[in-house]
Image (cartoon, rainbow, N blue to C red; front, side, top):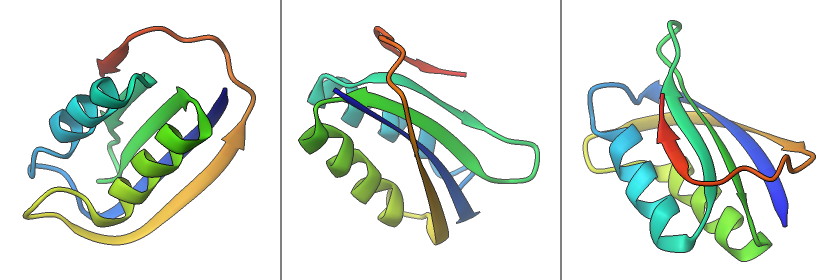
Length: 88
């Protein structure tokens, strides 16, 4: 089990980024959350096996159709044992 926090910069709000991320996380069995930040970024936390988390991080680097991802900051964190995946 690993945990990553990502902050996605660019045209990432108003393009279904959070909902698409939630659906992909649930399909991969990942726990965590995703939210819009006031500065225009999208922030997410993923907890799952390494393969699932890395796939979700890779998705964030591209985003859904209509997004314009400029940069993704990825931080390693200690897993907290989250369950479920929330849109905040």
